[in-house]
Length: 146
Image (cartoon, rainbow, N blue to C red; front, side):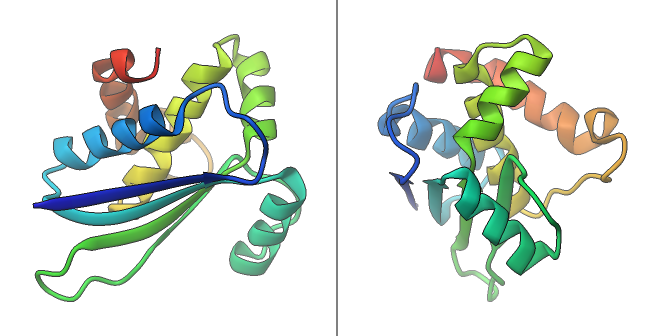
């Protein structure tokens, strides 16, 4: 079993350590039964996220998280990239009244679940099975990011 999680930030200092972010993603992989994976989590600036959103999803403006799972060949490790915009996470945290650390942790879990193939509708995502799983995993891992 080999799970590797790389964490980078071009968006400045984060309120969560890279070690905690990697540990949180690893907990999600473990909870989802993933034995072998290589995951990259990159924290990017608003302009960089807007470019990714336009180029890869055809959408204008910012979003909080974008995930790119890579196709698996039978038996190969899970491989994927997760991009998170801390500026959007801060705005989301203010809007919903949660600490920024919690919102960043939520986006790490959310992006990791997307890499694993989970998805949700654009409208009503907070009531989707993926969202419920995300919140369950976030609650279980609270010590990993608090």
